[in-house]
Amino acid sequence: MRSLSRRRVGWTLVVAAVAAVALSLGGTALVAPPIEKTDDTRDGATLATGQSDGVVTAFDGTGDVVWNIDVGDKAFDATRLDDGTVLVAVTYEDVEDCGRFDPPCGRTGFKIVDPGSDPRVVREWTIPVRGAKNSEVHDVEPLPSGEILVADMEYERLITVAENGSVTWRWNASERYDEPADPTATDWLHVNDVDTLGDGRYLVSVRNADELLIVERGEGVVEVIEGVADGRADRVLFEGQHNPQYLSDDALLVADSENDRIVEIHRENDRWTIAWSMASANGLAFDWPRDADRLENGNTLITDSRRHRVVEVAPDGSTVWSVRGPHLVYEADRLSEGERVGAQSYGDAVASDGEASSGGRDGFSPFDGGLPLFGAVHESLTHVVRVPYWLRPWHLAVIAAAIPTAVAGLALVWRNRSDE
Image (cartoon, rainbow, N blue to C red; front, side, top):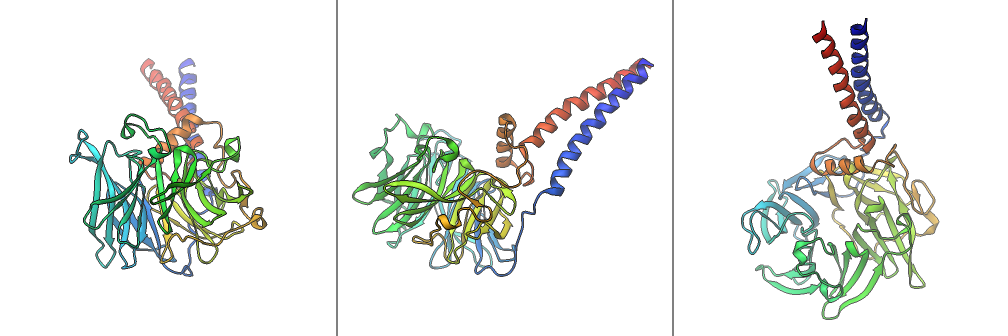
């Protein structure tokens, strides 16, 4: 009898473990909102890049791939140039051509791609970096002079590169911030974005300082926009802003990534406050969104990185278009407009409509809180493999609990067989 009881307990544990995993995964997949919402009414293709797969992809209005190309181990900013080619910030990992660094190292810089019938690289410029993490060039911009403006995260600087590959101008962040002994040995400031505002003025994102700067050639920093408020949930910027868009002198659109939201901030009486924000789209809470562009039609194009999707939302928060993007999608542009300076600004009038809000997190994201260990594991997984968009940290907790439960059950069954 004891043997029979032990066998029953063992199989009960195995069945319970398998059922818990199957029901949690299958049930969530069944009730999760769809990630795609496409039609043929989008004007122009949508360009998107993948940080984890190094792919640049152009989608049409129905979500079909127009063209794509693998440009390296990582792909970040991509901009279509006037001649139809595409400028892309790229990074290679584990290379041997390392300059002053010991191999293997990383190389980062930009490529120009001709997306014709057979997409190909027509120009490349890269520099060696100590490693391929937190040293990548995240953003490159074309200048009217023909130079390429580069946000160099390895040395925390802005540089311009001529067609022959020579560096023609530089601004070092050490002009404003206290520099460590070797900025290449640490993720010091994480200068992750630069946009041209005209007349030699550039909007610069300094992620680790929670600041946006306006840098003017020949003058240096002429304006500072800082993160404000005391608590994480109320901050305009919190250790992770990406791809700010300059709407006007008193309005900016920012991917407030670590708060899992998009915010439009306005300046009133020399203080920046949130006028509009979004924490979800199409019923799915954002998970590390890293780009937001205000389009000519008044909508906002957003990359939701760990959901691997690109979504277009109306001012009231409703989703009008959504597509699966490249792996860990970084940046997206609607062609041919790209990211425009002086785009339409929203205001408080739309702040409470639809899924738009004055802050916070909503949408389909069950049981995300209170699991920091599994949250970190989930975050790491999204960088390595393309996990299902509905998979959340609590699923990993269920799996982690089910494995030893099943092993214990099988051990009881095996012990019972050995005793027979």
